[in-house]
Image 1 (cartoon, rainbow, N blue to C red):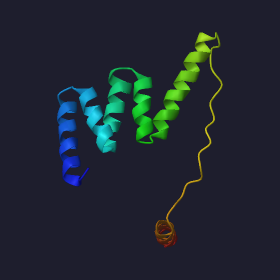
Image 2: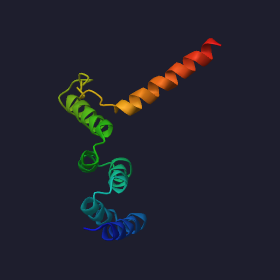
Image 3: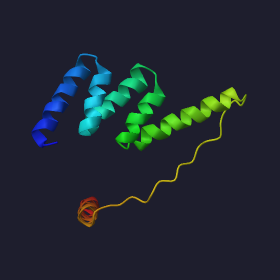
Image 4: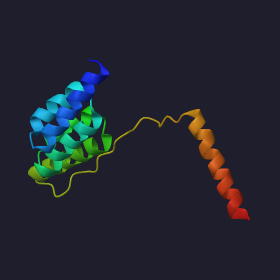
Length: 121
Protein backbone atom coordinates (compact mmCIF):
# COMPACT_ATOMS: atom_id res chain seq x y z
CA UNK A 1 0.00 0.00 0.00
CA UNK A 2 1.36 3.41 -0.89
CA UNK A 3 1.53 6.34 1.54
CA UNK A 4 -1.49 8.16 0.08
CA UNK A 5 -3.70 5.10 0.39
CA UNK A 6 -2.50 4.52 3.96
CA UNK A 7 -3.29 8.11 4.95
CA UNK A 8 -6.79 7.81 3.45
CA UNK A 9 -7.47 4.54 5.28
CA UNK A 10 -6.25 6.04 8.57
CA UNK A 11 -8.52 9.06 8.02
CA UNK A 12 -11.50 6.77 7.41
CA UNK A 13 -10.55 4.73 10.48
CA UNK A 14 -10.51 7.89 12.58
CA UNK A 15 -13.94 8.83 11.25
CA UNK A 16 -15.27 5.39 12.16
CA UNK A 17 -13.70 5.61 15.61
CA UNK A 18 -15.10 9.09 16.28
CA UNK A 19 -18.59 7.99 15.21
CA UNK A 20 -18.45 5.00 17.57
CA UNK A 21 -17.92 2.31 14.94
CA UNK A 22 -14.93 0.86 16.74
CA UNK A 23 -14.78 -2.57 15.03
CA UNK A 24 -14.69 -0.93 11.57
CA UNK A 25 -11.99 1.48 12.76
CA UNK A 26 -9.97 -1.39 14.24
CA UNK A 27 -9.96 -3.24 10.91
CA UNK A 28 -8.50 -0.20 9.13
CA UNK A 29 -5.98 0.53 11.89
CA UNK A 30 -4.76 -3.08 11.79
CA UNK A 31 -4.53 -3.00 8.00
CA UNK A 32 -2.42 0.19 8.07
CA UNK A 33 -0.47 -0.63 11.24
CA UNK A 34 -1.54 2.72 12.74
CA UNK A 35 -0.20 2.48 16.28
CA UNK A 36 -2.03 5.49 17.74
CA UNK A 37 -5.36 4.23 16.43
CA UNK A 38 -4.71 0.71 17.70
CA UNK A 39 -3.85 2.12 21.13
CA UNK A 40 -7.11 4.09 21.18
CA UNK A 41 -9.03 0.94 20.21
CA UNK A 42 -7.29 -1.01 22.99
CA UNK A 43 -8.04 1.74 25.52
CA UNK A 44 -11.68 1.75 24.42
CA UNK A 45 -12.06 -1.98 25.04
CA UNK A 46 -10.06 -1.89 28.28
CA UNK A 47 -11.53 1.21 29.95
CA UNK A 48 -14.93 1.79 28.35
CA UNK A 49 -16.14 -1.72 27.51
CA UNK A 50 -14.31 -3.49 30.37
CA UNK A 51 -13.12 -6.22 27.98
CA UNK A 52 -9.43 -6.67 28.87
CA UNK A 53 -8.91 -9.77 26.73
CA UNK A 54 -10.03 -7.92 23.60
CA UNK A 55 -7.86 -4.96 24.60
CA UNK A 56 -4.91 -7.31 25.18
CA UNK A 57 -4.84 -8.25 21.50
CA UNK A 58 -4.49 -4.60 20.45
CA UNK A 59 -1.99 -3.70 23.19
CA UNK A 60 0.21 -6.57 22.01
CA UNK A 61 0.06 -5.27 18.42
CA UNK A 62 1.52 -1.93 19.52
CA UNK A 63 3.91 -3.48 22.04
CA UNK A 64 2.41 -1.75 25.10
CA UNK A 65 4.12 -4.10 27.53
CA UNK A 66 2.97 -2.06 30.53
CA UNK A 67 -0.69 -2.68 29.67
CA UNK A 68 -0.07 -6.32 28.74
CA UNK A 69 1.57 -6.88 32.14
CA UNK A 70 -1.27 -5.09 33.92
CA UNK A 71 -3.88 -7.31 32.25
CA UNK A 72 -1.88 -10.45 33.06
CA UNK A 73 -1.54 -9.37 36.70
CA UNK A 74 -5.29 -8.81 36.92
CA UNK A 75 -5.91 -12.23 35.40
CA UNK A 76 -3.59 -13.89 37.93
CA UNK A 77 -5.32 -12.01 40.76
CA UNK A 78 -8.77 -13.06 39.50
CA UNK A 79 -7.64 -16.68 39.14
CA UNK A 80 -6.30 -16.60 42.68
CA UNK A 81 -9.65 -15.32 43.94
CA UNK A 82 -11.45 -18.08 42.03
CA UNK A 83 -9.19 -20.67 43.61
CA UNK A 84 -9.96 -19.29 47.07
CA UNK A 85 -6.78 -17.38 47.74
CA UNK A 86 -7.07 -13.83 48.97
CA UNK A 87 -4.13 -12.59 46.94
CA UNK A 88 -2.14 -14.13 44.17
CA UNK A 89 1.65 -14.06 44.38
CA UNK A 90 3.17 -11.06 42.62
CA UNK A 91 4.19 -11.72 39.06
CA UNK A 92 7.79 -10.98 38.12
CA UNK A 93 8.51 -10.01 34.55
CA UNK A 94 12.02 -10.07 33.12
CA UNK A 95 12.60 -7.35 30.55
CA UNK A 96 15.44 -7.37 28.04
CA UNK A 97 18.23 -4.86 28.66
CA UNK A 98 17.44 -1.36 27.48
CA UNK A 99 19.22 -0.38 24.27
CA UNK A 100 20.29 3.27 24.07
CA UNK A 101 21.80 4.86 21.01
CA UNK A 102 25.41 6.01 21.54
CA UNK A 103 24.56 9.56 20.43
CA UNK A 104 21.74 9.78 22.96
CA UNK A 105 24.02 8.44 25.70
CA UNK A 106 26.69 11.05 24.92
CA UNK A 107 24.08 13.83 24.91
CA UNK A 108 22.69 12.66 28.26
CA UNK A 109 26.18 12.56 29.79
CA UNK A 110 26.85 16.12 28.55
CA UNK A 111 23.61 17.35 30.13
CA UNK A 112 24.48 15.66 33.42
CA UNK A 113 27.96 17.23 33.40
CA UNK A 114 26.49 20.68 32.71
CA UNK A 115 23.97 20.27 35.52
CA UNK A 116 26.68 19.15 37.93
CA UNK A 117 28.86 22.11 36.97
CA UNK A 118 25.93 24.52 37.44
CA UNK A 119 25.15 22.98 40.85
CA UNK A 120 28.75 23.41 42.03
CA UNK A 121 28.74 27.16 41.33
